Length: 150
Image (cartoon, rainbow, N blue to C red; front, side, top):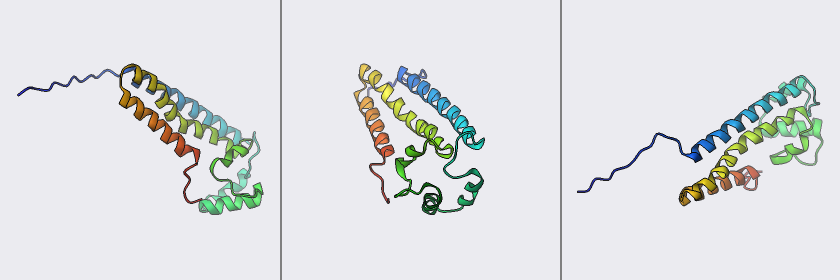
């Protein structure tokens, strides 16, 4: 009977290092922006859609009730601010912090896309296709096109 020998390596591949580097830098950018946008909001450098003094009164509400209340009392839109509607509110301190959240959410997509060329170059077509599929699935999920229950 022939023995199957599997060669294991403890060294990270170039793709793993690239993924980790992008993830680390993206996380740091997102974290720094979180601190900055939070400071802009808390120190009232930017006006808020919902006044800071009143926000705690809304914390105990279910999400739908909160959205109805802030829309009725502050925004006065024809529709509730759901999905990507926050983009219209990035001039407000309490919504500006959604930008670093979106960045942090998108870093994984960028990581997957960055490693695809190296995977194809190395001949790992299956992994490259899986990385592309993962990036596409994450982007589709983030797009809101598959929103359920709205």
